[in-house]
Length: 180
Image 1 (tube, rainbow, N blue to C red):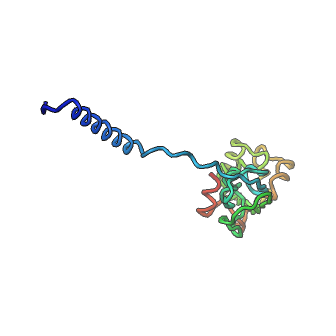
Image 2 (image 1 turned 90 degrees about the horizontal axis):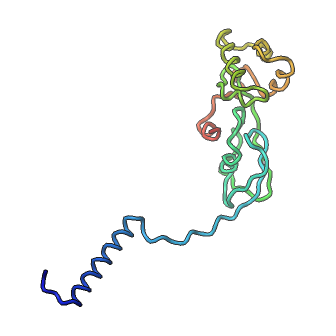
Image 3 (image 1 turned 90 degrees about the vertical axis):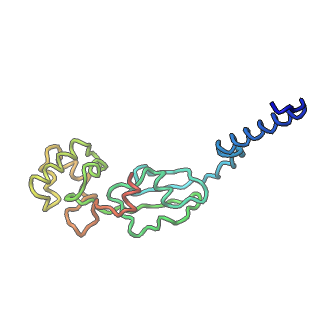
């Protein structure tokens, strides 16, 4: 080769190995470090217009938006207009997400399935009937949909409106992100 002595060949081999190891570490993302301590969790409660109300454990330093995400997001009729989603959370505190009303003339099938007693098939029938009649003029018209009797109507009527000026399922960008 280059007429190197055994000691020089050994030093050259060690240098090549060190260079190879260094490149491997660089390409693998660096030297692994010890994982940081797990975050301290706090216990907070959320109720109102969220999919999974109740007590939830979230990392200390979380915000109301994080709690809503942990609770499965908001229901389609949640009214977040007066809520500061970047409010920091405090341990053992209850947070309430207020309810608005779901506009029956604008609600999507998925929105309707969050109503008590309304499954996907019944939601499809409501939307189909709405399209057939050109929109609901009165809330009680929903009882004309096959499968919605007086009892079911009584269970959902307080969450619905047919007026455009009321809160509807046309969500702001922020609310749309929270429902998914």
